[in-house]
Length: 555
Image (cartoon, rainbow, N blue to C red; front, side, top):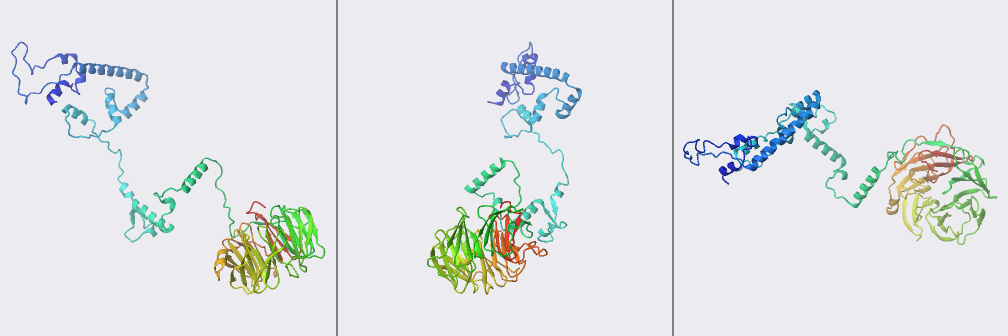
């Protein structure tokens, strides 16, 4: 449609809605003849500008809009009469003086409009109306020192000074400093850590961890607690009443052991008696005593399930078995195939299936724990000084008098490996940890070598992880605690010669024993309770000392 036709059919946007009835009915004198005169000749189309003649519908819309505007103005005035003067003043400060034009307020609240097309076919009136909305907001306040604050001083800061690569970097922008900090962090961590990777694909484990975090956030409570691992340096320990205080003796304590399932400790001595005590740390009441006539006890030990007590003597080949449930004492006088004249040292496998007897002339005898019958024998070079089982009862370790260690397979009874204990001339003791990680070997020179069990199986010349040299006499006793956090080492050749070694740091606790009190004396046997809450040792004075380890809450 040409612009001339469009101008006739559309009302003027600026004035069309405000035209009165009189102005709408009045014809244009320039376009036609004057009143009573001849008609004038029309001007050419290029010089003639047709007037805007609103239609009847546009006029009706304009009248309705004017009426609505008048009603809104009347309602607003009625409402403002009830407003206090302070509120009206505040509205003028915030919204401006908009008494006569509410549309201007709406335009201000709507914000600037973006003009998509600069050239259009709209009329000049419409373009002028659109230009009223093309204003842009300006910042209210601009800080002139913003650019100066973006630079960070590197030279005069002791923490940032080390990150300068050259003298010209006395000042860096915040973006460069952030990149430099990222580089320092990645250099210290050896690369970008997994939690900082933004493009890492989620796996099933990630989904499970997210679910765990969601469950954690849905519960309340104290989620921050102390570390469960045993700290090194100082051991929180307390000396309790002697275990055998209700049955004192002057004979040497040969064995002390905690029951694997009950809060009971067994004390055996050279006075031919085995006593059971209830452990409470205060009075330790006696439960029962078993007397074996003419049988000075060399070693006594619980079975793996705690239902039996096995005992050997210093000058007999008889093995006594005490059935705790039935209350019967069963002597094993002769084992078929076993030609040993004296049975002293023995070990019970952790799973309760086997009994290992250390014989003479380098022989090791494997017996069935259930039937007490001989399964097989093994032989090493030299004398058998000590032996033990691995935590899974699949392997046996034997320390010889020549300073060598032999590893045997229980099922096949074949030697898996053989190596020399570093620096040892004469082995005295050997122990394995409950978690299957360590093997400790004690020698006659007072050195305890701690090995990794895997290296003992695979290497012909394994190197110890750590050599404990805190004792100067032969190490006769070695015991790991159930959590493999403490290794107790002792020598029966020197008073107060007992140390507790922290694992895995392999450092000795400095506050045990208390040398000034001299209460430990010569230690012959040691043991930890099933959950490491108590530590017991027996000396040559007939006392079974008990200590409470406060780090562990249970017996």
